[in-house]
Length: 116
Image (cartoon, rainbow, N blue to C red; front, side, top):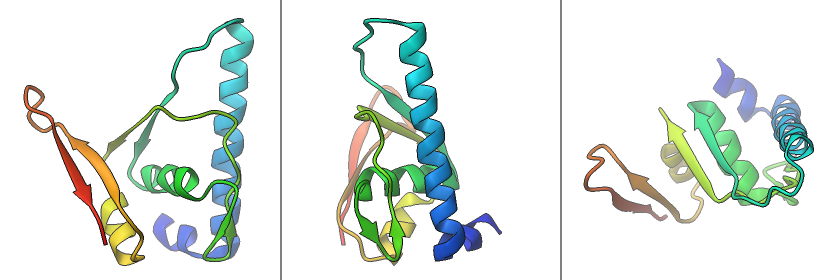
């Protein structure tokens, strides 16, 4: 059911606004607790959450398919996904390239590229 809500412009806008806002709030709270920190930021996205984060990273600061994607206040070094339908979403939308590291065999990670 959540996929249907995310696919709607009205609720999709609220979802990306809320997720971006919460990510920015958590980032600033982290910085406030650790003055001078300058490390890299990684995000873990699960299921539809991974699709939302991929969309924020791909479209931040622009409008795409009727949704104005906010910009995150930080750069994301790595995005880890679990149970992610991101690749099928991108293929269905006919969006361009996505590169993933497939780690089902942790001793032999390999790069997987999806391109449409």
